[in-house]
Image (cartoon, rainbow, N blue to C red; front, side):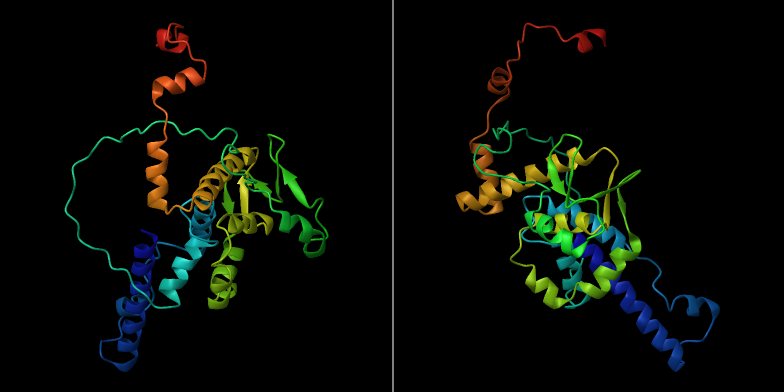
Length: 261
């Protein structure tokens, strides 16, 4: 989806450039309407939105490497690739199949995780950011993480995002980060203050990061592709009844909230 949206944005910029050239050469008349059409009329994915997408994708176990969303943007806007939107026939709605529960313990049963903690950032922050009050931060749950800043809601610094996407993230940067783990870019956005977390919500993002990193490392440990990992998780899932037993749920115990409703 991101590839297609970036391709649409690129096509609109190409249209505006061609239209501007036609106006300049006199191929079409110079009118107020044609002058306005010399500029792109829309942009689906701004640099600020791209950074937000990249941050969340970086915490997903399907992300192949660091800066996954920026790599797609670079693929379209710098390398010139285009991904047209196909015309698809509508499909009937289907129910979501629940495959069961997969035991992960404290996200440590089959693979280790660190979530949003970055040992590299902890080592380098005293040198790169000497004015900070600490080398790292802690969530509301007490877990140590990479340094981060907070705002009233999830926030991306638009100016810093535009500067990084359009000026810093070049082909050399893209190639250099292809071998880095996806979670590394989530660490970067937080540590540089480009992404700010909602006040008091850091533990939720830490849990998201640990979940994604756990399954990414599980796939790495078992040498599985994303499709093979899905098959593995479904094949080894626990049903609702067994899951309730593991949680110590007593089916004879009345649910007061359900009774009240």
